[in-house]
Image (cartoon, rainbow, N blue to C red):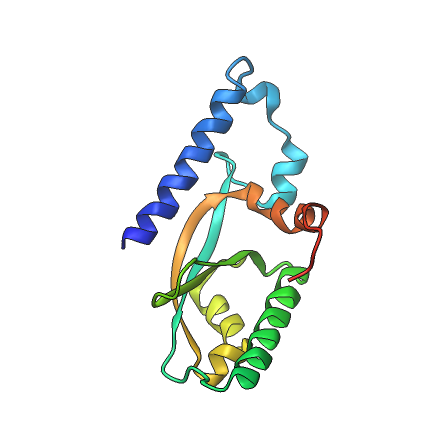
Length: 156
């Protein structure tokens, strides 16, 4: 629950920061109708997503080689979902706690997200389990995948 609150606090801070940066212009002066439509934004610049918390599963591989292969397949699946536009954001949490990472699926329903999680080799193997929640966030998350490669010198 603390992590969920942290994510919402971060999102709220980013929204307030963005509003503060452009307080000289009204929303009607800066609103881009075509872009909002393209990103699936509602009148508030927001849209529905499904957030997934990745947690340690019951079948964590102990063999380093098997673990590395499973991680590579997991990362390949993340890349595929991002390229298909189904995954708006993904990333690990620091440390070795029960909570391993987060996905934000660019889908309308938990059922759609569940079907996508079932394509993940780490989920299939039981190394990870996912907890899914409908989430309302900025439609601008659609820009993450567009610009991420321009910011990274190395591929994961």
